[in-house]
Length: 399
Image (cartoon, rainbow, N blue to C red; front, side, top):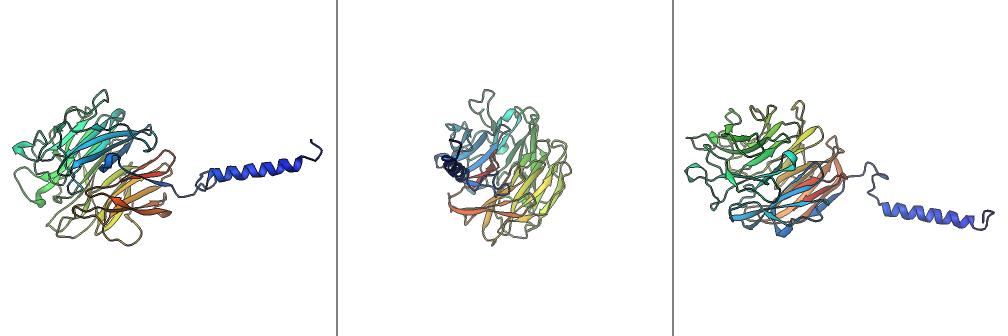
């Protein structure tokens, strides 16, 4: 057996087996192509839901909130996934009062944040059917959290004590130390008009059990675009951020970043990009975490951008635009993986009571576009898209 007759066949078997292994490993294998573009998977929201909001905890568990029902007065649903979004748990209803959430306008829906121990915190602009109301029977800023057992959500509460006038929706942020921040924009008490609007923050230091009276985040007279959304976020170092659109002199609808390094006691204000337009663009914003940075995304004049912010210094990189023709691009979302790659996804062709499509582009650590990009139809009316990074470095888009 070793003197020659079967040896050639052993060589053939060896090379055939090696070829099979290469084919099975596939062209996207990181071992074969360490610089290959990140894979992007498209996933549909369960129950034909809309406006997905996704967060991933330290264990890789995916948490998601989405809207179902009448867009004027529907419900929020909460699910989790342990396998990258392929399968989700049975949905839990977030809101105690049926029909107390709203989806009309795309930007008034729920926001999701994960806090201490991976607890889910949810905040949203209440519908006309929501209870309790804000002072003076005004629109409430609703908040709830997973209960201590994790079996369901506590009854929602309104956190507005004085800064009424909610229109474009609010946001929620949470950190691992038990701080929770609910933010929204509204006129100063006793005033009216977009010029008098600013961002207000209600802060909890006990994981959302109680909230202090809301405080104005910045004294700068930027105004705030009444029917635009905003976004709040807390990174893993306890820094707090907020993105919103100004409305100074009615036409200066610029993108602003608020940042706090003292857990929301004070905020620095920075203009990210100017936009002169006389009407409200009903835009939304996103903030997400990278290894040593926070990534901000916004829209200006039909184009979508993102920028990286260093956690340690708050130093911001230049805005990076999505490649291609900028026309009707809205509602950008971002996520970053452990390699430092960032996916920017957005909607196209969306309008009032009209769905559209979504597109995406992956950028490398230096901010250059990679070969991972695409476009797909099917974003429902009043909806948005959400993105997240998987432990293997790939990305998923929920729509």
